[in-house]
Amino acid sequence: MLTLKLITEQTDLVIKGLEKKHFNGAKEAIEEVIATDKKRREAQTTLDQNLSEAKKLAAEIGGLMKQGKKEEAEVIKAKVSELKETNEALKQQMETAEKELTAQLCQIPNIPYPEVPEGSCAEDNWVVKSNLKECVIGKDTVGNWDANPVIETAKLPHWELAKKYNLIDFDLGVKISGAGFPVYRGKGAQLQRALINFFLAEANKAGYEEIMPPTVVNAASGYGTGQLPDKEGQMYHCNLDDLYLIPTAEVPVTNIYRDLILDEKDLPIKNCAYTQCFRREAGSYGKDVRGLNRLHEFSKIEIVRIDKPEHSAESHKEMLAHVEGLLQKLELPYRILRLCGGDQSFTSAICYDFEVYSEAQKRWLEVSSVSNFDTYQANRLKCRYRNSETKKTELCHTLNGSALALPRIVAAILENNQTEEGIRIPAALVPYMGCDIIK
Image (cartoon, rainbow, N blue to C red; front, side, top):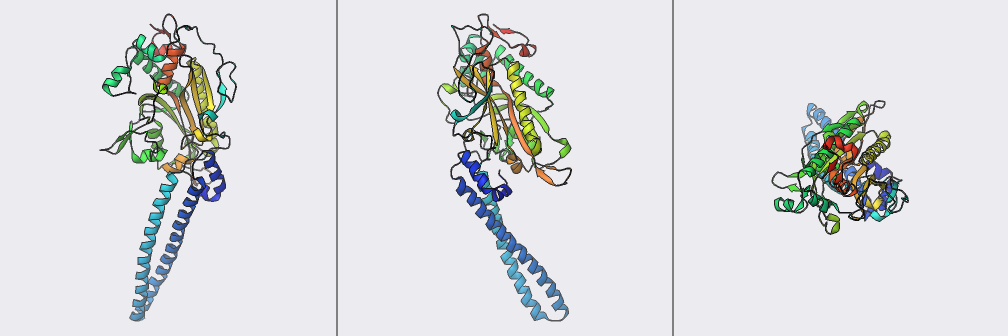
């Protein structure tokens, strides 16, 4: 969440940032936070004054008792007793104000960086790079792609290819669990495993320590990374145990560093993790959810960094280059978008999406989001580091990205590599797959 220091010292900047993110009632929300904080601080000031006075009075009582002035001592004792009652009430006021303040801050999103474009929805995002020919930067256009030969007259979507080659059984998934839970089998399961091993191996080469975290987290972990309170109802909740199925490995991995003070020399910390991910995807319907386009359970490799504020922008660039390198090695047509303020997540300060193009579906498929959260998550997590020069503790910056999410990568590989002989496997994936074609 945003720090009180930022809100109180740069109020106008915060309000403008929230408006850029299209957060309704930005000015009112910030004014409410400032008013609640003022109430809390006033109660604290009065409490401190009362405690100081009570301490002086207590010293007077001892002196009066020694002088045999019992009646005067009793009068002062009564004053001390009144102060204690007042102080208890002040403590209650402060506790209430602090709870109100936390609740208010939790409802306010992160503010975007200055380079984030203006805009309210996905149509306003900016294309900053693409490996497509004739792609117009900044506009939603599709250029030419020098891919390997495909069956131009029979461009099948991945769900038809999955059925043709017996790779994924969507109907069986419905029988076992419901829509959005596909069953991978044979070469389809092998392709999933090959991609997982490939992505983890590439992350390891890039210096990321692999983590194998739980796929359920407690409420404190969900709160720490900003998934809770769950404003969009996207998380699966295990009511009996009050645990949540993770929507991404970002949640358990980033929470490793909750309530820690890290050594500056250990930063940046680089972690990666493969997990199953679970999202309710409430309100999803239509052609956009066909096949692997939108699932309730899916596999994903996540990369996470904890860094110093002055180096986090460089870390973000390195993460973007890593994800782009994966798509290049998989020989897929892709583009990179800088998200506008209105299309960013609740917690991010800046975010880039990676999309691959589906010739069969004639649409772009998002396969990764790479975000810098600035201090927003770290403030909730109490994730800090000790500055080696000042010896003071400062909030870290947290970053994360998909590297990569598997479903739409599988869809893109199937659709963009179909030939008359079968599905061609990208060269970089062959050692992990054990074959160069699916027949």
